[in-house]
Image (tube, rainbow, N blue to C red; front, side, top):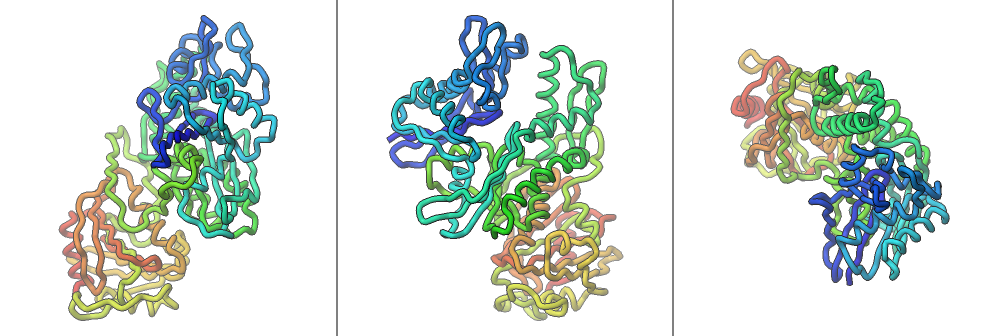
Length: 534
């Protein structure tokens, strides 16, 4: 049996195919798993779809419709000198998908949860016009997205935050014995990734070009620059002559878009109401921006779950149960994912949020981070001593300092860092103790955090991994000061880091020098042994 799922989106369309009940695979269009939903009416009256349509629009933009999904209520759209039914525009996109997966036995089409019967009828009519006359079913996008999440017991609820190119949709769903019930849904039909592009364009001070072809090229360059800032701390955006290229930092972009994003996050909070949420799933390409997850966590107290490719999860989820792809970042030790920032013209104003957080906590340019589940209470003596279970969360600072063991005993001083804009405050820890050491005239700091939730250590770990230029180097066993686990060397633009993971969800720590120093990884290792080694 051949099952085809199609996520017809505002800006892009994604499709997945499953044969004989096996694993689903994404369809490729011109070598890419994402097909632009754009449609161009050719001079011969035929409809061209996808990247070819975008290329044609540069020559004749009057014949171009970039977002047919937004025209679902319009009946017809004027393209050039002729009106084209919206059903035919959508059918052209679906027909392009059908060309890559002929003769499916079942087709599943996804749609926004708030689409009423008339809109759903347009989608079904387009499917028939595209040639699918057999088993065609409709599934709400948040239901498909939730199906891609990790197993959720019946009775528990999750939320889906879907930010596409032109709209933002949120939904709250409860798991049942047979599937999902949509408890509440809402949306912003006037806000999506393109609105963030426009904010950036306005910031650059470029007046809209009267030449539609030049304006479209500029819009594409601005969008590409925005997307680059989801991965890098800075980027350059080419501007029309005689203007020089613009240099933009992630901090600048986040300052620009934060008020608009808060509006969307507030809608999610209002929609969830008092419903306790097990998870919040991020869907849509615009959610790649790190600020989205940060604002959601600050407002709702839940660390959102993400996937490597949020654009494709709805199509995959529409086919039903699959291997879980949602992960809390990072959950245990993840495979190395090297990221290298390209050469920049200027020094970035700010890096990832962890830089500011680390500075607030005494500062590190290199660190050791632990996440223990079965880590034992650290005591003086040989590091080979068997560990005993750590508590779920420490009752007070003295318990936390006792856990630190040799490190606290050798420290010049240990203080409670809560209430000082530290990581403990930022990540909702119960306790945060910071110990200071003097090693060869250099100040080093060990920070120990305790929490009732695994999210504290997960967030802290994620911020390290999002540092500009972060790259995994090596892994080694680490067993010093009664603390055991796997250490991972990471290099980043701001210095060297060691992330240390064990099995615990509730206790984590990091160690490193003040920000005036950037020692090698070998020096950091030796300082740690000098400080907390038995």
